[in-house]
Image (cartoon, rainbow, N blue to C red; front, side, top):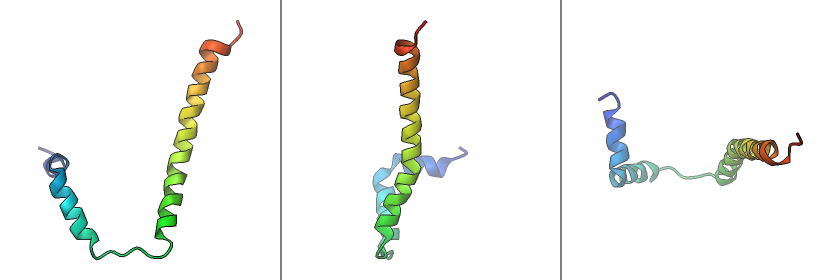
Amino acid sequence: MLFDKKVKRVLDVEKAEKEFEERMEDVELEKHDRLAMILAALIVFIPVLLLVIGLFLLALWFFFFRHF
């Protein structure tokens, strides 16, 4: 199979989590890493969320509020 290793990793979640925890044991977060991760998540998710809300509002306008 082309992606055999990735499929096995997805199917065996407990093993993947254990390996991830072992890799992350030596990694320590610096003072502002948590803030940086939150800001990065906001930068990624807010535009997508605004786009989805905009499409939803456009569909509502198109079906209910448009005057013939």
